[in-house]
Length: 446
Image (cartoon, rainbow, N blue to C red):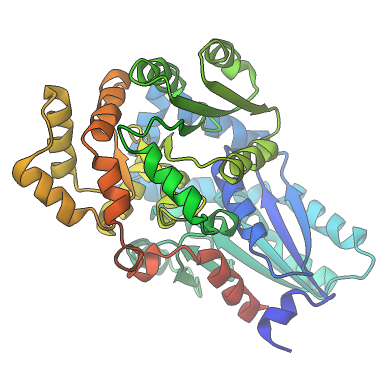
């Protein structure tokens, strides 16, 4: 039997884990699920650990705790923090053990092999702590696969006991391997795979729809221009989105905004305000999983040309080409936290985004209202054959002005017309087939 067929064998069960901590790890879970070979038995294992959710929200929303957390993400403080946090996570793994045992009890045919996919480090550590016990009790082979959801070498992603940890870049792999070696963790297998973006959104656009995307970014086409604005799970940056919508609308009445937001007490006021703006389509749900599904549906049902988002795991949508369904131009707000700066570094290293010097030069032209011409225009034309995204200047007014300036000066049009998928995807890490490679690798472990 080939390794791929072992996944769809009746004796194999794939378990996807889910924690109430933002939308990032859930989006990655969705992407991996969408690329599963046919006939694979799957179960979703949710965690009711409110501690993970509370910590995530508290750190994301409060400036002081964010700064404190930043301090804990580097150097010696990171080592100390990781040591104690890992112990805390592993000490509280009894509930996880019971849930996995319940999964075995619920199966008509007892699985011989169980692949557990963890896209959240908290759940990964809990499962690693009880993996051997469950194997001994059930007689099944448990394969724990950890997918790192940012290109960040934060030590907490090093999970002793995992069968493999997949990371988006060699840079992150080397740093985590060095940490594992210095911590005397034996046999921690860390491998590089392209980031797993959803294969459903990598479908090629028809030539008509591709031309429509091209017209949307042109200053004189008169087309409706579709923007997607996903509000993060912790609702960071709502003020920025709240202000940038009317500022962009004042530039062009053809702009249409698809706002994707979870219904929660802390988003209620934002949703009420945004509802009154013209040309805004609200897509909401109280459930995280539904929000992720709705977001993907927007891309399937519309030709989205721009997405204004944080440089979170959304950064890796830059791995789609412009002629793919998910290939909108990504416009990033200011990074929050180390992992978002690390993601921007990934994009710059792979030339999917202009370097900071050229970006700031474009900002200054926009601020001064200068037309794009001469050496800068030539430079742009030469360099934009792999560019997929931009970092926006700080502040919603400047950001809106910059987006409009780029449209008027045909910067976005230049990006799409000069883009070469061969150049953009020549590095292994920058390819969009990560999900397919993920399951090929996992099948070998099974």
